[in-house]
Structure formats: C-alpha cells, structure tokens
Length: 270
Image (tube, rainbow, N blue to C red; front, side):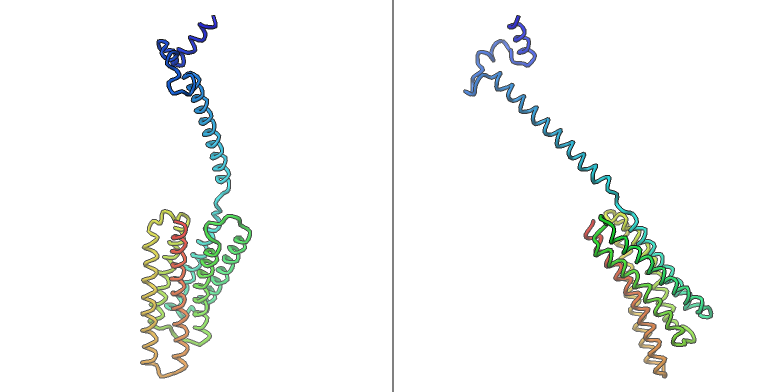
C-alpha cells in the first residue's frame, strides 16, 4: 500500500518515467535526483514568498505616501497673488488714461498693495507650518517676494503722480502701463501651470513672452527718458518724470524676475 502511494506521488510530480529517474537519478553526483528536485521546488517556494512579502511592503509604503496629501493651498495663494498683480496693473493703466479719476484710482492701487501684503503674509505663515511643500521653500519665498515687488513698484509710481503734482500723464506712461497689463496676464497664466510643472503645456511660451515684454519696456523707458532730456526745460519736471518712469520700468523688470523664478522651479521639478 505504501509503495502504491509513493508511485502515485512520483507520477504526479513527473518523477516516475519508466523508472529511468530511479535508475539514473544520481547523474551529477549531488545525490538522488528526486531529492534535488524537491530541494529546487522548496527554493522556488521561498523565492515566491519573499517576492510576495516585498510586494506587500511596497504597497504599504505607497499607501503611506498616498495618504500624505499634496497641499493645494500654496497654488491657490500663488494664483491669488497673481490676480492682485493683474488688478493693480489694470488700475495703473486706467490711471494713465483717466487721470481725472486719479484720487480714486490711486486709492484703489493702494488697496491692492495691502491685499498683496496679506496674501504674502498668509503664504509665508503657511510655509512655516507646512511639512511637505509643492517645491523648495526658498523658491516659494522668492516667488512670493517678487510677486509682491511688482505691486509695490506700481503703488510707488502711482503715489508719485499726486505727490509730484503731475498735471497729466505722458504717452510713454500709457505705453508702459500697457506693457505691464500684458505681462501681468501672462504671469497669471504661468502661475496656474505650476500646479503640474511636468506637463508644461504652453508654459515656456508664456515665459518667453514676458521676457520679450521686458525688452519692450526697456526700449520705451529709454525713449521716454531721452525725450525728457531733449524737450523738457524744467529740471524738476525731468526729475519727477524720470523717477515715475524708473518705478514703472522696475515693475516690468520684476515681472521678468517672476518668469525667471518660475523657469527655475520647472527645471528643478520637471
């Protein structure tokens, strides 16, 4: 009876093939062939069990990372800051065209500056209390600061319009505020694309356009200052307008700085 059971087990495992394995089992000198085959099956079983253990460990590790959410709050704050830049630039453009409303528009620009400060302070406070950030903390700080700088420069230029008792804007100021409005809208579109820097859909084109607008701003500023020294006879008039032009040009420069910062973020995280 025991011999019958053993024969059946050999047939099921493919060990009994005309008795050849029994007769020629020890061909390699490593012991009977059935023992070596059983040993191999045991090794394969251990390998499969280890693979399953590793797979389960990987799943647990992935679960740990998946339950740590990516904080979307920073992206919302970036977009809020960009929207303030757009609003401020538009108000400044209105000021250059509707100077009769200067008191109202300058006050609204001042409110935008305060709103920008609030957004930046909220973002920095969040940065201090957040363990995992969308990208490097230094990059977040730099981006926020440069976005705030744009609004600060526009506010400084607008305030000087009444402080220096400017009677009417020049055509060059109108042109520069147009450049600012275009650059601010491009910043808004670029910031939105930070939510997924790996896709970069159209982001590079937006950044290139901002750089091109900065060049236009430089050309306008040089032409405006040259006209001042060529046509103006009042030295005080020249000094006042030169500072307003410079402040406006700096606001455009800060837009380019934002583009540079975004480009650096993309290169680090793409």
